[in-house]
Structure formats: structure tokens, C-alpha cells
Length: 140
Image (cartoon, rainbow, N blue to C red):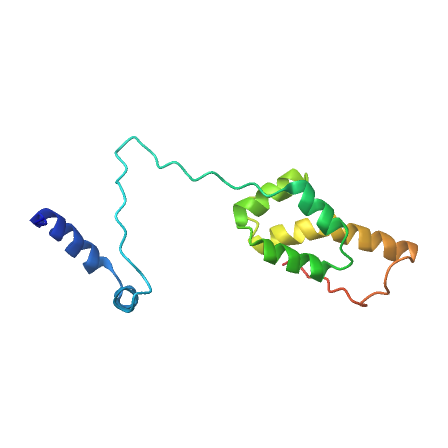
């Protein structure tokens, strides 16, 4: 099959827009060119369905943890992006300013599920002594 000249022109235009690093990635096989259907005017690409995390399972797991650091590690293992974290925080009835970074969203989730209980136990004298096995992150 012969490739039409118009297709070759489009590929050449695309290649001219690439950075030297992107070209090196193509040459080394770490990147590839992908052909996708273009979106016509007036149409929008549908975003892939957001996999909703199991909020109750996450809440129960976090609530049973004994330190904030273990909670942060657990959230890291879940590999939730900003939108999924925002969904989780919203399901936990936490206020969510749009300007919050991923770290601030995680801070809110940890404080709502682990931090409040640790503070309460410390006030009652039931929890670990201050600074013993728990690191408190300071939000900016």
C-alpha cells in the first residue's frame, strides 16, 4: 500500500514539533507515535469513566491505623490521582477548595480519619505520648 503524500506531510509536521528529548525517546523505543481519531468541532472527547475508590473500605482502613505516617503510606499505595482523592474527600464530607494540591487533599483525609482520633486519645491520655511514633505534617 502506498502512503498518500498528505499523510507524510502530517507526520513531518508532527515530528518538527517534537523536542530533542522526545525524538531521542522515539529513537530509543521509550516512546511511540500514536494515531487517534480527531475530534470534530462541536464534539468533545468523552473522559474515561473515573474508577471510584471504595470509600467505605478506605475509611475503615484509615480509621484503624495508629499513625498518620502509616495512613500517608497507605494513600500512596492506592495511587489515587487528584480527582480520585477529591472524590474520596468529598465522600468523607470534607471541604475541598479547588486550589488544594494533592498533598493538601491527603492531609485533609488523614486528619479526618486518623488525626482527630489520635488528638482525642492524646487529650484523654489514652494514646502514645507526643512525638512517639507519629509525625504531624504541617500544611503550608
